Image (cartoon, rainbow, N blue to C red; front, side, top):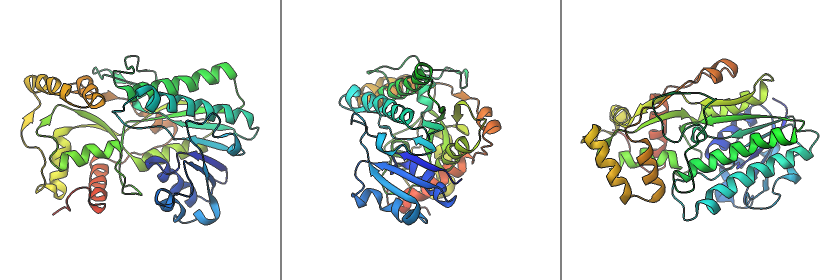
Length: 344
C-alpha cells in the first residue's frame, strides 16, 4: 500500500496497530492526536520502524469546529477517534457530542478534498445491538434501544454511525464509506494505558468480580481489527458495514482460559452466579454500580449473544485469531505492564 493515509485518534489502541501495519507496508501516514508534543502519549508511535520518514503527527481535537480540514490531502481516511468509556458525568457532552461531531467533521473535511477516495469509520457492535436477544446479528441490524441514560456509550456509537450514513446519502460525496463494527477488542497494547475492554480482564484476574456471572462477550483481536481496516482500504469491492468479531465467550470460559494460561494463583472468581437466581441478583446489584456499568449489566447479563461474521471473512478475507489466543496474549501483555500478576 503506497497511499497517503490519514488516521485519526492515532495514539489509540486500535489506531496504533493500524499505523504499525501501515508503516510496515511503506505507507505515508498523517496521524491526528490531541497534542503531538506530548511525548508520553506519542513515543510508541514515533519509535515504530519507519515512523521517522513515513509518519507525521498533527493536532486535532474532536470538540473543535473543524479539526481535520487541514489534513485531508490524502487518499484514504481511517477515522478511529471516538470516546470509549461506559460511565461519564455528562453523556451528551462527554460521549455523544465528540463522537457525532468528530465523525461529521471528518466527512465534511473529506468532501473538500478531491483526493480522498474512501473513508473507513471505526464504529462498534454497540451500533448493532443494545440488548442481545439470541437472534443472529448481522450488518443489517441496528441498535434502536440505547439512549443518554441507557448504555450511553452505545448510544454515541449509534448516533455517530447513523450520522455518517445520513451524510453519505444527503451529500453524495465523491468518496465511499466503509464501516468496521468490532465487538470487544483485546490483545497486546503499545502502551501501559488500560482501555475499557482490557479493564474487564484486569478486574477478573485481580478479584474485582466476586463471582462468575452470566455475561457473554463477543471478542476480536486488535491485530485482526487493524487488518480489517487495511483490507477495507485495499479491496476496491469492499462496501457497507462489517461485523468484526471472532466468537462469543462467556465469563466462565474466560476464567478457565486465564487459569489454564498461568493465572490460577490469581484472584479469579470461583463462585458461580450464572443461573436464573444469580442473574436476578446481578441485575439487582447493578444498581449499586456506576451508571454506565450498571446499565450495561442490566441489558447484557443472562442474554444470549450470536452474530454472523461471514461478510468480513468472505469480502475482506479476514482470518480471525481464536479468542483463546487473544485472551492469552492480552493477559500476557497486561502482566508485562504490571496491571495483573505474572503467570506461573
